[in-house]
Length: 163
Image 1 (cartoon, rainbow, N blue to C red):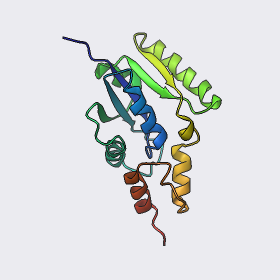
Image 2: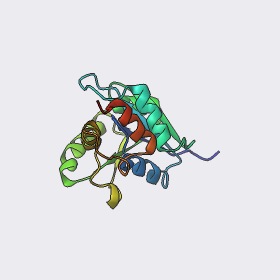
Image 3: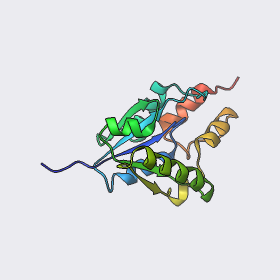
């Protein structure tokens, strides 16, 4: 029986952007399945609930059966271990992301030496996209149609209606 290679891509995904979706789809070029792990961070006030974010991720990856979307709280390495995952995927948009991500990768390795982290860079056309920028644009009724999946754009319009 062949071994299935599974990776985990974690984040808050509030909301999922075309950059996130790009990394998920491209990672399927070197793993069989990706678990998208939606972080429940009690210190943040997200725009979308965990259930909404999960549904939006599924829509953004067009319900690809190779992508599983699950939520978690606590340590990522614990969730990855209990999910049978040894490969964590992290995205790097800019050099400024590297220091934080590198520190997290080293701490994850300290906590779970069997866990590996792979850094991926976004495609050129999605490098500038971040969830925080998308939220800000949507909050002020700007056009986010080229930044997120159409389902996500519609959900953002519903969250920030014109008054």
